[in-house]
Length: 279
Ligand code: HPA
View 1 (cartoon, rainbow, N blue to C red):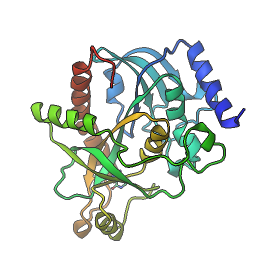
View 2: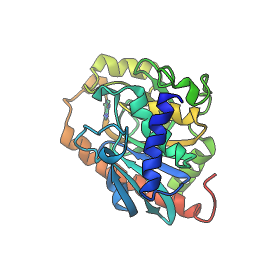
View 3: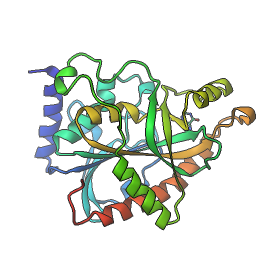
């Protein structure tokens, strides 16, 4: 058997033995975005370090736990903590949780991240649904050994972010008076922030926000034909003509503020879908 597949199978069989049931909805939480997990009625919590073949989260603000529980009455698998290219992981490692979630029944995937706003009409602590992306990390999670056998090779990317879900979120945000933007997310490696010239460049090529994650997972989720919705919490506004030095404590503060809005939106959305299969 394909060695990659065996690694996935080992993780999945461990999790099944731990009592993690098949679940259709998965959530991958971004940097500094752990509050959602505190709203979860947790039934099972398993540290990444216990799961065979799971990479270890190295970023301090990331918890590194797989949670099973209920959010707004809906059963959900939550990855609290994700893996980044700047931690020197391979794309297979970065996207391993997505493959494991899929094998546990997940066909609907929500992702959050913290991002800098390139579009200067966006505000700090605002939310931006990803309508599209620019993948600027080099290589591809579908171009590593053994990965072509895990799904189709030439994966369609014409609509990676489900349009009907985006519309539902936009309508809901309006009714809840939560400002919600939509735009193009540029994924860079990091971990250094951008120079003024780089922000200018990102704007020129069509980015509305920039961050260091999410797109590898989305590419794999699409290979696995999952429905995807991703939301950026805008932690800073990147004006190349007035570029202030990075303020990390402020970034975390804005992430916290924005995340509460995202949580409210998500809970209301799940509530509205409560009696339906997520489709
Ligand atoms: N650049 C890249 N990643 C980020 C930023 C940024 O300005 N802000 C938050 N994450």
